[in-house]
Image (cartoon, rainbow, N blue to C red; front, side, top):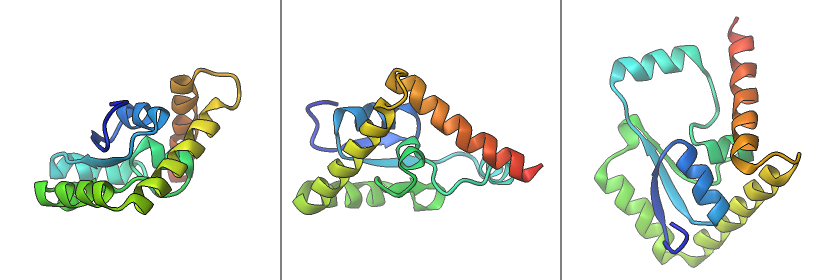
Amino acid sequence: MAHADVALAASGTVTVEAALLGTPMVTFYKVTPLSWMAGKFLVNVPFYSMVNLIAGRAVVPELMQGQMSGESLAREANRLLSDSAARREMQAGLAAVREKLAQGGLAAPRRAAALVEGILEGQIAHAS
């Protein structure tokens, strides 16, 4: 992944790994409709990828459920491969995520988990 020009990453910890490496990416995720509805009912978050949750803004594109298709993945990947300004902008956002993960003295994966856990706990507390 460190040598890739772009990565296609299922939303999860792999997005943090790609961010630490500075690899531009397109994130995606698709589950059964019932699982999606249950998840939406239980947790209300502004983003689904760990990178965007940690950044607190959209750094990487997220193709979720109905937005995720081979065509949409190819379109987003091609945009990153052909648009150097978009790629540089994303790499700057990924660098900011790396900086945020470096704070606090924890190893990056534990720091990422702690940040996301805090976001989810806040969402669950608001739902109660």
